[in-house]
Image (cartoon, rainbow, N blue to C red):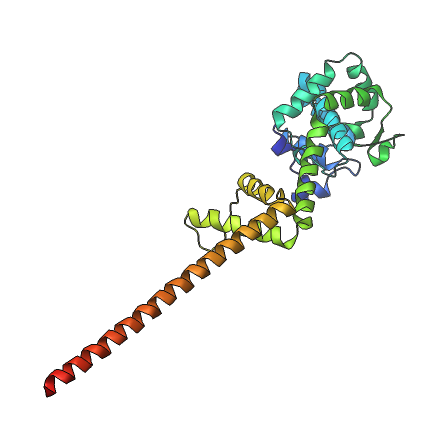
Length: 277
């Protein structure tokens, strides 16, 4: 089943919304509509779920397992999405996860018991220490939940999401904790990269180079106080040499100017003397 279609809610259809049984969840309505079922003609959630199972046939159990496994994944991640597309799993991976759970002995029978009530099938459910069917909450102590949770953890699905969230948080905190001078280093690096690629300083740059920027920033951060002092001393010495050289050049120019002026004076005196001789 196409998860994109499954994630569509019937709330976008006023007619369907007005004629949907009160106990029917939007996820269940979406599945029914996708299968071409007329929800308005079905009088209860039990009737809608029964029609869904009939339409799915042999794949009904796999589809039920998929919804249950995705619900467990949501609970383990402490997420708030309300449809399968909220996870980072595509339709194929979702179905594969459901099949992996069904392959474990005891899961199928436990799932049938856990989802005996039609209000718990083909929808995202919540989990707590005790079930509350009317609120869409199932118990975490069931065999089906434990097997699904184990399969999800062994597949690294919980850790992957936690790592992605942790990386984003760490990057944000690192950027906020950087001293002003290091932020200036980042601006300089980005500016240099941009100019090399034909951008100008007043243009908006859409794509940065995190790896290169991080590398050069880390090099700046890794310099110790002694290294900074040595660098400053070397720069100061270089500046002094430049100033001294410029001053020496200026003195040479002044000396030659005086010599040329003296020679010009002597030449003029000789010229005047020759005129009166």
